[in-house]
Each structure stands twice: as structure tokens, then as C-alpha cells.
Amino acid sequence: MKAVTWQGKRDVRVETVPDPTIQEPTDAVIRVTSSGLCGSDLHLYEVLTAFMTPGDILGHEPIGIVEEVGAGVPDLMAGDRVVVPFQIACGDCWMCLNGLPTQCETTQVSAEGMGAALFGYTRLYGSVPGAQAEYLRVPQAQFGPIKIPEGPPDDRFVYLSDVLPTAWQAVAYADIPQGGSVAVLGLGPIGDMACRVAQVRGAGRVFGVDRVPERLRRAKDRGVETFDVSSFDNEKELVTAIRDQTDGRGPDAVIDAVGTEAHGNALAKLAQQATSSMPRKLVSPLMERFSIDRLAALHTAIELVRRGGTLSLVGVYGGMADPMPMLTLFDKQIQVRMGQANVRRWSDEILPYLTDEDPLGVDDFATHRLPLDEAPHAYEMFQKKQDGAVKILMQP
Ligand code: NAD
Ligand code: ZN
Ligand code: ZN
Image (cartoon, rainbow, N blue to C red; front, side):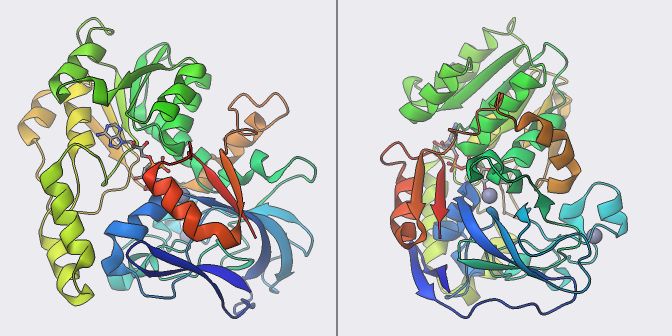
């Protein structure tokens, strides 16, 4: 089959690899019909190269048709249409039963000290072959795949794999009071969707911050009060402008949907570029001991949120020694919540919103639909934010 493989820094290629097969009774194999490209894939493209191996199959946002199931998957059969969550979880351990499939005790990558295995996401997360491919082996298929109805196009449901539950959890963790305010930093697919979820879940005011014109426009068109970072001389001015909208206090909650590749800190960017070009053996221990994250957005979030407010971190961070303004965090009495999205924890709540009325605007959320063969172009375009690319779906 054809699959998108990681070959090195900013180098992905579509290659022919062996078709996946059933290996465990709890496996399924699906034929992928659409597969999303995510901001998390961009971290692998450039920054997290130390944790990748050439040939790794990328991707974790698939929708498709079941081809084959193992004997331990009673609820699925060939021909079923499914969305597959980006994390692999058993559904039956203590963590899964407590709504934390990202921490699944059956699939935890304990050799690396990490939580549940993820599709297509580095050796830290189990080096599981990913979903930007014609076929995907789905382990723990007795729990993960979400059956969806025939009929509507893939776009209606594909975001259940990641974007929707991630945005949903970001908003749930933000704990916005009814009618209260939230600022969302970063208006990529995740931040954009978090704004939409906040609106339908009853936030009174939603502020969105980015610097990419079409991303700001998309949010503004849906009633978000947008702020263009590049129009302010410094962080303080941006924070003041948003505080002025909230009686001088700052929003009740701030969602950081940017993560480790925030712009705004040239020095940290240099450090990331240096480590992403170094030999793997040298980098891994370095990354564990020093800060490798670009923290500009996180620091803005801490400044911006009102005293006693909530910070919900949904952008991915990876440093083990990031310097944090503990004085400010403590003095402002900020609640902080974060993590990978627990897909099955939220999917049943989200499904009723995926209707013809389309309150979340999923049907035209994608800006690009490309054949899988064009993956190298898709990655480059998404990273460089060219051609208005916000969300790209690839079709094998
Ligand atoms: P993206 O890279 O398209 O979006 C990031 C956006 O942040 C861009 O639009 C960029 O212009 C903007 N930005 C950069 N620096 C900024 C700053 N200082 N202030 C304001 N905006 C800034 O990616 P995405 O797909 O939307 O993903 C966003 C983040 O969410 C990534 O870190 C991704 O890894 C993470 N993610 C987490 C989960 C989860 O389960 N927690 C799931 C999916 C994605
Ligand atoms: Zn993703
Ligand atoms: Zn489990």
C-alpha cells in the first residue's frame, strides 16, 4: 500500500510499504478514506526529529471502512464506517474506566515513561504505524473505533478522531462560567474549533489571537473577537487590549492552542532548530534536561488570564525543564489543566452536534482536500501557512 513516511527533518515521502494485517484478536484493519494533517504532525516534521525513525508512517486522524476484524472485536464487521481516535486504548483498565484513555494502562509506553500509545507519533508513543496511508491496523479495536452512519461526506465525522474531542476537552478544562469569557491563543484547526465549541457551550465572549490573516478572518466570520498579535509592539500591549474588554481583569479562562512552536521567541527558536539537526543520540538526553519549548504563548496565557482564572493547555509541550513564572502562577491563583484529548471520554457528547444543521461548521472546515500522493506538498503548505491552508484532509 501507499503511506506517508517520515524520512528526516522536513522530509516526508509517499512510499510503498507492506499492507497491514491482523496480528492480535483485538485488531481491525481499516481502509482509510480520509486522513487529517494535524499541527501535531508539524512537530514531527521539524522539531521532534530526535524521536523519529526514517520510514515511520505518519498520521493519526483517520476515517474509513472496516476491511477485516480479529476474533476479539465483536461489535465491528467488514463494511462498517468508522472514525478512529488518535490514541490507542483498551476501554477496560482503571484509567479507561475513569475517562482517561490517554493514560490507558494496557497501552502505556512504559519503556519511555509515557501514557497511552498514539498512532504515528514517535517512539515516545510506541512507534505505531500511522494513518496517512491506504490501510491502517487498529489495535484495541474492541474499544477505539467509533461507528458512524453512512451518507454524509467524511468531513462530517473525520474530526472526531482528534480536532473535535481536543477542542471539546480544551473548553471543558477551561471551565468557563456560563456567559463568561475565554481567550484562545492560536487559531489553527484546534484553536479555531475551540472557539466554536466555547460558543456552543455557552461562553459569553470569545477572544481569538493569531497572526495569520485568513485564520483570524475565519474566526471573526463566526463571531470571535479577534486580535492580530503582529499588530501589537509587544505582549504587554496585546494583554492590555484584551483586558480592556474584560473590565481590566482578563478573561475567565485562556486556552493555549499554540504549544511548543510558538512564534515570539527568537532565541528558543534557534535552540529548537539546533537540536532538530543534531544526531539523535545527543539530542534525547539534552531534551530531557533542558527547556526545548518555545514558551511565548504559554507566558502570554499566564499574563492574560484573570486572577483566579483557568488555563487550559491543549497545544503540545515537550520540555522537561521549562522555566515557569511560579510567582505569577501562584500569586494569581491560576488553575492549570492540560493533556492529550481523551477522545472516547467526549465523543458521545459531540456526536449530536454533527448534524445537517452543522452548528460547529465541520462540513466546510477543511480548506484543502488532496490525494495522499501530494503529502509532501501538504506538509510544506500547512507548515508555511501558504495558500490559505488551515485544515488539510488527504484522500488515499
Ligand atoms: P497549527 O500549528 O496550525 O496552529 C497553531 C497556531 O498558533 C498557528 O495558527 C500559529 O500562527 C499560531 N501561533 C503561533 N505562535 C503564536 C503566539 N505566540 N500567539 C498566538 N498564536 C500563535 O496547529 P493545530 O493543528 O491547530 O494544533 C495546535 C496545537 O495543538 C499543536 O501544538 C498541536 O500539537 C496541539 N494538539 C494537541 C492535541 C491534544 O490532544 N492535546 C491534539 C491535537 C493537536
Ligand atoms: Zn491531530
Ligand atoms: Zn485502558
